[in-house]
Image (cartoon, rainbow, N blue to C red; front, top):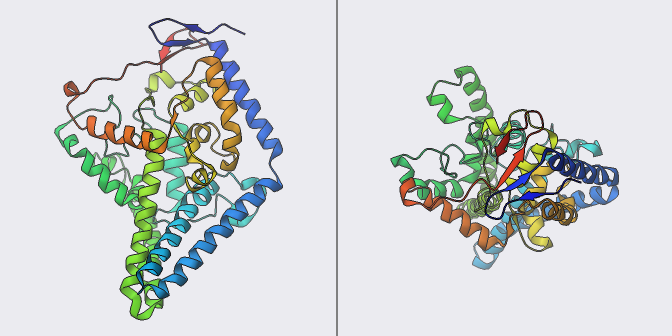
Length: 382
C-alpha cells in the first residue's frame, strides 16, 4: 500500500493509488451488504410502515377529542411522528430505490408517492439525480443553498444576502413547499434558461399533487370532525410545521455544518469511482444519536453513508458507519460528525456569517485534501 503523504502545516495529499484503494474498500463494503439483504430488511421496513400508519390513525382519531387541549396536543404529536416517518424513513428511502430489490409494488421507487406537496417524480430528479450525482459541485448541485441561500464562501455575495437568516427561517417553516419548488429552478426561469413547456409541465404536476395534499389536510379531515373543523385544521397545520422544522434541521445538518467541503466542475471532471467516493465523504456530515433518533431522521443522521450508498436500505447505515469511519482514519480523511445541537448551531452560524459581506467574515482554511489524479498527474484541491 502507498504511504499516505501529509505535510505538517499543509493539506492532506492522497495519491491515485490510495484513492482507488479506498474506492475498492467501499465497493467491497457495499457488495457485502447487498449480498446480505433479505428478511431482516423486509421486516424492518414493514415495521416502520406499520408504526407510521398506527401513529396516523391515532392522530386522526384523537382529533375528535381535540376540544380538550391534552388530546389535541397528543393528536398533533402522533400526526407529526406519522408525517416524519412517512417522509424521512419511508418516502425518502423508498424513492431512492432502497427497496426495489423486494419487487413489491408498494415499495417500488417508480410508483411510490409520499405525504408531501412535492410530486415524487420531481423530487427524484432534483434530489436523486442532480444532488446525488453532482454533490456539492458549484454550478451543478442546486442543493448548495437551494437557489436562495449563500451556504458557501464561493457563492457570490450581494446586498440581498443580508436578509439570508429570514430567508432560511421562511424556508424552514415552509420546507415542504420549498422542496416542491426546487425542481422549477426559478432563477433559471428568470434567466430564460427554461422553456415555458417545461415549466408548464412541472407546474401542472405540482398543482395536482399539492391540491390533493391541501384538500386532504385542510378540508376533508377537518370536515370529518364536524364542529371541530378549525381545531383539526390547526392540528394538521401544526403537524406539517413540526415535520418541516425537523426535516429542515436534519437535512441542513447533513450538508452545511463547518468542515463540509464544496468543489468545482474542473476538480471533478471525469471522476473515477474512488474520486466520487472521496467527494461524497468530504461533502457530507453526520449527527450522533440513539436508535430512535436515527429512525426519526430517516437515518440521514448517517449522511456520509447515505451519500456513499444512496440506494442501500438506510437501516444498514449504522452498521456500515464504523467501517466507513475506520477507512477515513486509515486514509487521514475527516469524518465530520457531532451532536444535533452542535451541528444545528454550526449551520445557523454559517447562515448568519455568510449573509455578511466577505470582508467581515473569517475564511475557513481550504483545501483540506489534495487528490493526485491518475490520468494527468495534476493536483486537484478538494
